[in-house]
Image 1 (cartoon, one colour):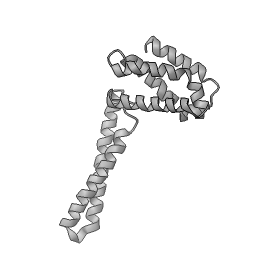
Image 2: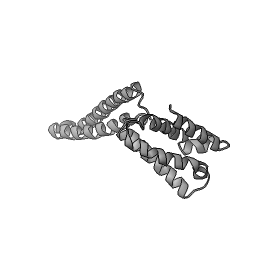
Image 3: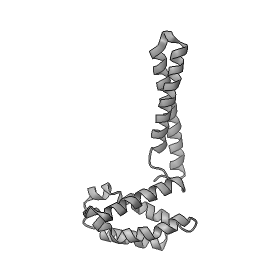
Image 4: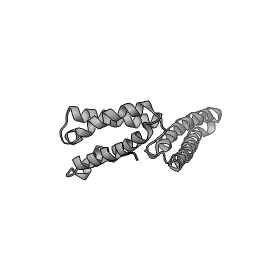
Length: 160
């Protein structure tokens, strides 16, 4: 962790003393801190991260107001959190927990239903059984594939 991110995180901790733990979880403060560390580390090689440093420093001064009072500061904070998360995911390969498990399970389920429908047309005597078999097979295959991809994300320490 570089000096910039250490300084910003310590300022953030000081300004958020006395805030309820529930509010800190709701406003994703821990995720914001992790993204500050990542931006500090990756800003040497990424121009977008370098630009975000200014926005992070600006919102860091208004973080207490953003959490306690709804309005412009809260919207700015929400935008920065969303923008940082999207950037970290698309450019640097950081993903939320179980991202691929959920995503590939859904697509496996859809593909399985299509396969089941084709099998239902081919074998009309076992129509609902073929549809169910395709659904289960697709869901299971997507789930297993997603778990493996999530394990690689955890292995490479790219978990958001």
